[in-house]
Length: 194
Image (cartoon, rainbow, N blue to C red; front, side, top):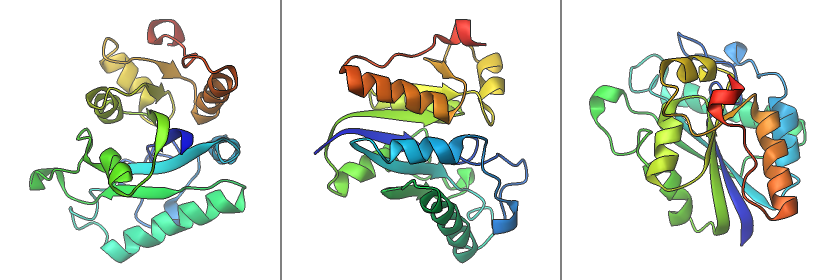
C-alpha cells in the first residue's frame, strides 16, 4: 500500500489545452514545469494516475488508435524525463452519449480501486470544475491549477473552487511537504491566490 494516489487531469494540467483538441502528436505541447513536476512525483511513495475526458473520439475528430498514439507519446515523454504514470483512465465518449464514465462522474477514479490499487490518501489535480466536482463527490481533497483553463475557471465560478495552485509543480511541492510532515495538505486559498 502506498501513502497517496495522485489523480492528474491531462489537458491544462500536464499539456496545453487546445480549443480544437489535440489531434496529433505534433500538437502536444507540455506545460512549463509539468515534466519536472511529474519527475518529482515519481520519487514519492505515490501512485500517479492520469484521468481525462477525451471526447474527440466520440465526436469522431480522431480515431481511437490516433488518440492512443497521442497518449502513448505523452507517457513516453514523461518517462524520458524521469517521471511515470502508473495507469490511465480515459472517457472517450461524446457528452451526448450520456455515459457513466465522463468526469465529473467518479467512475474513472474508482476504476483504480477496481484495478486493485491500494493507498492511504488521494488528491485530485486539474484545471476545471469537472475535476473539483469529481473530487468532492469522492470526498477527496483537490487542487485547481491556474494553468490551462484554471484562471478562467476561478473567475467564472470563484465560490466553487476549494484551492488554487499556480501550476502542477507548486502542487507537487505542497504534496511533498504534506507527506514529509504527515500533516494535512498545505494549500493556497482561492480568494487569496487569484
